[in-house]
Image 1 (cartoon, helix red, strand yellow):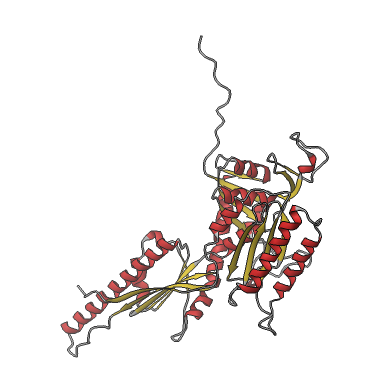
Image 2 (tube, one colour; image 1 turned 60 degrees about the vertical axis):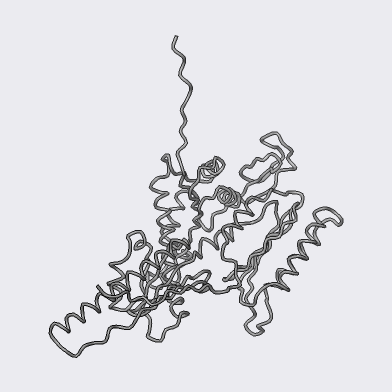
Length: 432
């Protein structure tokens, strides 16, 4: 048996300026109490610099004007005006003093009766926008999280392997496994040559087993579901034999790199593969929903999906990216309904308490509150795939993905359930 060829296993965690754990603040913000009288500000900002002026952030100017407009629209010396003024000043101070230049996007929720302030620095840009409402606007951030799951890239040869955890396009963590040199090759032929080759083969197999074990350990601890591999023609077959089936299913593709390729080159080549795998996951979720909708463990359409969320039965919320439904909410009861608020309250409450809402926001808020996973399905086919397919007809609009077309037939939204709701029916009469 060959001597253990592994000389060192070193883990490195890079200091990055972004917030990586976004699921936890999302759930925290979903739990904020509705605040109709003192609304929340939700700001999302493209923080990329101006190409001609690196120190200028156009998103900062846009969001500053929007904040001023919101504050100016309030009646002076009211609780809402005072709270929004304070929230605006806190946001502006944070933007001007506390963001690292490497940050690409910013998401902030501020205000409300509890005067909350939750700033998140992101590694990818957002569209600059400001929302004002009784609850934080969470759909854009939920989509950001769902669109950009962390993934791993393994670059390996016979002597060294580097596993990189990529989060929001940043190389955030790294595991380097170094092996010893091959044994000195003997000049004799015959049996000596065969023995040397056996020792070399044993060494490669042992090194591959260690690389697979360490990679699997990291994937498990970090919760990584997507792995992209670049390996030479010698190490790749040995790695293929070493993976446990559970982790083999997480391999979403392979890339080829030049000899002098850098870590940045590996990440850049792996990104499209990870994105394609995410779209495949979306389609799988929609197919699962379509195959089970109408049964005991799946529902479709906004009314049934909302009911399942209110009953806390949802395991996976599946929603088209362009899904929208108008509605209203009375957070004093609480009670919600479809359409625009009317002059009559269907539950007997105060009609003045009926506030217009986007019902998709309520779906996202309820899903986060019960720790359901969220799948926001892309509606349009990527440009590179359009270029490879048939030419669209004029006036047809952008080609839609298969997942989006299937979801259209279910009114754009549905849910996979944790458990079935069993109606036992009326009680049987007691025997006389």
